[in-house]
Length: 503
Ligand code: MG
Image (cartoon, rainbow, N blue to C red; front, side, top):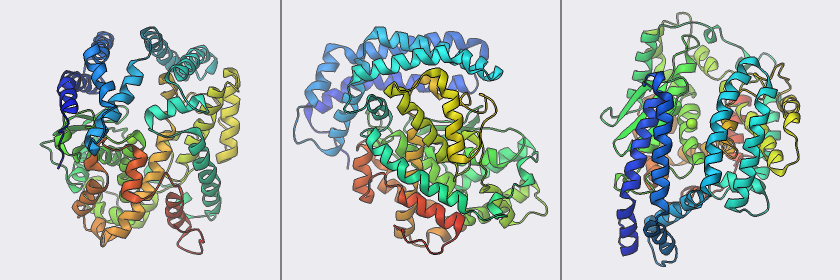
């Protein structure tokens, strides 16, 4: 039972209500911007959004609210939920407390960088983007100094997205993950069915039919459409407006149907998390996920561990055949189509096995950038040589190399959370198999409810009550240990034989 009893916390939550309201409005404005609004209104939407953000910040920093946030930090004997509220607001205060001048400069630099990135990418010319990246680097370094850090300036930025994470821990994670994944990738036999590229990847589909497929998938996953909806956008996303209002988007490219169903299942995984947070946390600052990494673990768990499994493929075959035809293809063909492994340049198109190399590469580069060890004009070359080192391929142009992602226009520290999400999904799978009776059979028969209930009890219901590492410790007695993910991938791609380092 969730109770907020401490009088200071109760007052703090009462004062927080307008901020929650603003946050709610910003969510809807964002959703509208990325889905349906007329493109002609984007500039004025940008102005309105930044004004609301200013109001938000002004309110947060008002003496009355700020002093309550600081006062709450000193209280002893709080319950876990109350502690969560205090932790979360004090983390937010650190960001709000950055000088306005820096925040304005940042917003300006990032907007300009985004436009520059779009044209640079079109022309595949990094030089058009590099002066903008330079300003972002300068701002990010300045921000790290202001936020404060121990040991490494990059730590200040990483911690914003994954509380408690740092360079030392990430170095440990990647130095285990990368060589072991390389071994799996190199271990795929010649003519492995996983490396066989399916004709389905370029086959077209009827969009209306594909929509039905996605809707059927969501029904299979047990969504209550009274609290949930799905729309379309260029880059699929999930947004939580409040308890009882969670929205996802998917995309229809017209070909290669897995490129529509896996984004759908991925975002549906995020939505499952959001919908299972205890609704009594609604209106508080901990009505959220524990971190980006933990959130991503849930989308990856549904996308990869459930969605790309043999059992799930079998389950959805009738939906696929009924709507997409697929004459001449059996479950096995579809399973290998879903799990095709390819050493490719583009992160967004990467499969489960090669994906983490793309993140390791970006992590290496961001770390060197924050250390001041590398000049911006050396980055494309560095990118390409890392790609060669990790995947044995070398991009022929900037657009399939360093210019492919938009993320650097919004700063550094975000990418590692993608790999952390994969790592945590491995931990979750291990315990799900251990603790949920007939885990595979439940998937095969479309009975996902017991799995969702287990996830809710272990992770979802707490929202942002615990820091991500506290949550991992509490629910799985683990840290971000990559061995679970490695074992799962080994078993999947190399078969269940002769691995000494099982966890
Ligand atoms: Mg995601």
